[in-house]
Image (cartoon, rainbow, N blue to C red):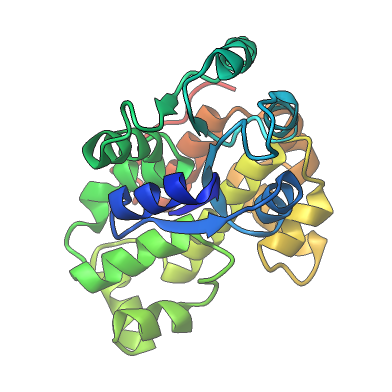
Length: 266
């Protein structure tokens, strides 16, 4: 899971010590860098400090909230009279998780906050839905599938899955067949479409942005996958498909028919 850390050095070091091994951090020294990272990398959680620009301000964080409402934000800052007013303004924007430096940022507390937000991401919810079906797979293969869900732009072919799991491609495919699952190629396609849907909930991304970020050579391929797995074009699912319904449809498409979960009403 990739975390954006738009915080000063002291908080960054504490985040690095507290974050479990499955988390990776990307640093942003300015709000411009933060915006660029969110647009170009598979960031699933952002830890931000209103003091990043020097004086306490809610403006840039509010902008991130408007552009990327599906991206969870955690405030990690210093408690002072100046930041209190900023906290109030951001709270009215729906940002609830706050960690105060040198007050409640013990590594255990930081790890709890990060893990809590991780459990709400689309990739984790999809894995939870598939956990029983994927349980018989070798642990190395399950770990690679988890990576593919969290960073679908980095794991895009069955060959890459096999290589990372240290098995040959045919062995990888046979494991899926043995469990009565669609091929790993379908798993990758579903993972990319679900991730695309999450990004398309945010006005900061166009359909073209999402296609490029997820490694589609053409926008029409994303459109084909969207119709195949979610029943709508990319533009349509942006406007009319909630994350809950998208997840239910993806699970139904991937799981064997006898274990599939019926989708919620759209």
